[in-house]
Length: 323
Image (cartoon, rainbow, N blue to C red):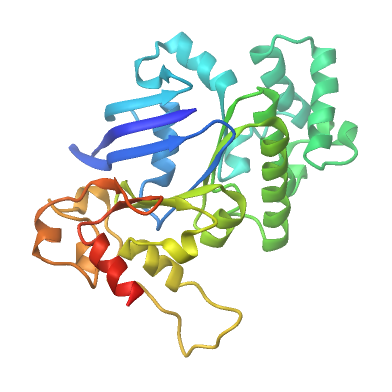
């Protein structure tokens, strides 16, 4: 369904081109959910923008981005509009920024149906009510007449999911859809996304800072650092089989409900962006296993034990962990 190969993206920042994605490789199978995790600035949201070509003016992109065998980077404007309107749907982080505050909910949902699907207004109203019901919103008739400011954040995120489903896409890109919600509502929204994805056989890229959430919702997890993927593992096995030092650090920094500790473990140093990374491994300055080779030459993303790892010393780290 989705295939990214050696994708590089650079943005114009104060007259200088700065890389934000570097040598990015990703695969997503049909019907699969892939989690993208990593610290702020690792390139997760920029990956979504690259897949949909929603990049700032002047951005330089190289590599290959294919959705269902079609080259997104080569699409002409009309083809790109059709692609965004039917093939791919994006659930943005902040629904209040994505929904026009001057339009009623019914107008917002109806536009996706009348413009993209070509149905009548009456049919659009009926389908909109059904869509609201499918995402757990009761009293759909009244909700369709309301404005965005009359709904809570959780309600609006459900409306966003409904608008994405209205276009009947095969690929959903969920860009931290639960960040602005409290824990209880987060669970409800994620449950709705997961249920609808499975019922409709959709593929999904799920971006989150919450590693446990990604492990619960996704089939596989891709860990990003400094604009690149550093490890890809089955969500079911990530706890036991993580091999990249950054992934191991992320797993170890989470609080435990079973053990008491004087303070939380932390990865030393600070995260770096793609434009700050040197010629070697971007994580080398924070890695306890780094050696001269790690600082001099960038490792490749290569297969290792039913996963993919970008690390020169992965075999030694594995042997050390076994011992």
